[in-house]
Image (cartoon, rainbow, N blue to C red; front, side):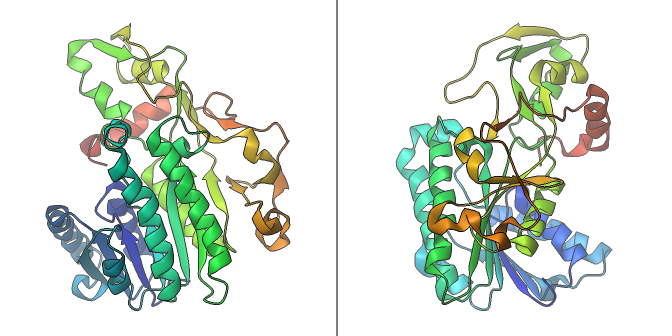
Length: 341
């Protein structure tokens, strides 16, 4: 599918882009990949890493990689960046929960208005397919970030109704806590090991655990599988935060500090409201849109099995749980990247 094709990724200098770009360059014989973002310093730093990666893997950096300064809020700049682009991964977002709460106008401009600009630009520039990244916080949202991402998801799903004459397909992938990412709980606890005490929000709290590599594979699968309008949710393990802390340091004391504003006790990626249009597959779930009776489209359902009407996919009712020794093994392999992912 990506053979000799051009891919653009918005927010490409973020955690996901730093994993997606080298993995895609290594796996596929693409024509070009464009990293679209607004931070020139991050682009400069990423370019240095990618030059070394390309040299080590026999890839022509100058031919395959392009950087494009721009903001998804800037409609005209998006139109310019998408000349000749075949596929788009939309990873740009304002996603830090407190930042969104204190700067709501800015969050809405990026996450909602930016999504609208992406949809218009992709349709008008005859892009073939778009996959937008979502979050567990878009399922039954309780904070502004989650609410804006739910709006964004709805926009990308409905975008398929506007693009029929242009044949541009839009779909969404949704996943939860990325292991070892900046500001997340694993590097946070790891850096507190010497103090011998971990602050725990609530002893009942659970979280989904996914690697960036799994997230990239889900995006690749979405491009291959989608008809348009699907939300893909990967099956991933859960872990209790208190068990996570014990795995990092079994001797550390725990102090319970309470749940922070806008935070959930358990992550949720599929609510019971979506159960009636959700189908299960070997490694993932697929939420189909109910507009235009798309949830009854056999081309979208394929070999999926419909879940029960009361189905909820949350981190506390998960069938798969990560063992402490599995987490310890992962940390040992990724110790140099903790907090930088």
